[in-house]
Image (cartoon, rainbow, N blue to C red; front, side, top):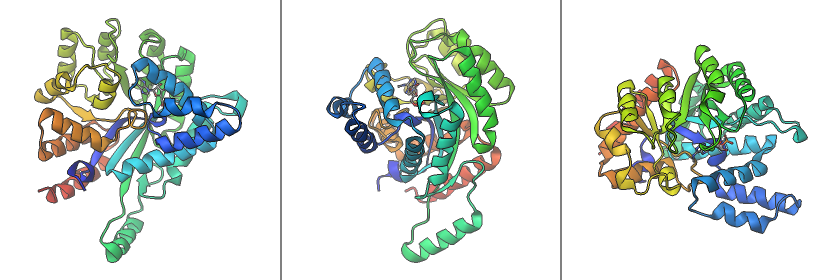
Length: 362
Ligand code: 6MZ
C-alpha cells in the first residue's frame, strides 16, 4: 500500500453531498429515471463529467440534491462516505452538511439530520466514535485480538464529528434555525457550524446574526472565505475570528497579513481549487506560502465525489507538486490534530494513533 494511503489522516473539510461515490449517484439516477422523475441519459454525463467551473459545480449540487434528498438515501450516503474515508485511513473526520427541508416528502431540517445520524449508526465496516456512540474499548480489544489471531489486521476505527452548514442562499431566519438545530444535536456529535454555498450568492451581513449566536453558544465555526474575489467580505470574516476558514484564495496583501497574525487554520482543498479554476496552476497555490510560514493548515478534499479525488490523493498531489517527502507529509497530517473541533481526550488518542504509525514509517 502506498504511504499516502496507509498513513493516518485528518479530514476537516468534506461536504456530505459532494463526497458521494459516482456508482451510488448513477444508481440513484437510474431509479429516478425509471420513475420518470429525471431523464437518466441527460443526468449520466453530468455526473461523469470531470472538469467543472465553480458555477457548474453548484448546478451539479442542485442535481445531486434531487437524487439524494430522502431520508433513506441520506442515511445510505452518510454510511458510505464515512466508510470510504475510513478505508483510506482517515482517523478523524469532520463531515459537514446543509440540513434540508422538503415538505413534499415530510422532511424537516431536524429529520434530515436524524437520517444523517442514522447513517453514522449504520457504519459497520469500521469502529466509529461520533460522540454518543463511542468505541467500546473492550469490544475493540476483542476485535483486535480476534483479527490479529485470524489475519494480523486490526479493525479500523474512525472518529466522526458533524458540522451543520448554512447555505448562502438562506435567510437570516433559516440560518438561525440551523444554529438552533446544531445546539439541540450537540449530544449527537454536532460540534459546529460552516458557512458555505455558492460564494457569488448572498451577503455576509445576512449570516452574521446566526454566526454570532452560534459563537456565543460555544459552537465551533468555520467559514468558506475568499473562494471568489469579494473585498467586502474577507476582512469582516477574519475580524469575526472563526476557529478555521476554508480555501482562502482571493486575499489582498493586508488580508494575508491579518490571517497570518491571527493564526486561523486554513482548510486547503488543492484539487477543488484547480478543477474549478479558482487557481490557474498548482505551482502558484498559496499552500506553499502558508506552509513555509508554518501557518496552521490542513489538506482536505472538499468534495471527493464531485472532484474525483480522495484525501490520500490530496497528500500525494501535495507531495509531488511541492517536493515534500513522506515524513514532512506525515507531520503535516499530524499537525492537523491541533485544528480539530474536538476535546483533549480525542486529540490525545489521535496523537497515539500517529505515534504508533510513525514507528512503522521508514
Ligand atoms: C462552497 C460548497 C462547495 O451540504 O448538501 N459546497 N460551498 N464552495 C464549495 N466549493 C466547491 N462544495 C460544496 O453538500 C453540498 C453543499 O455543500 C456546499 C454547497 O452548499 C453544496 O450544495 P451538502 O451535504
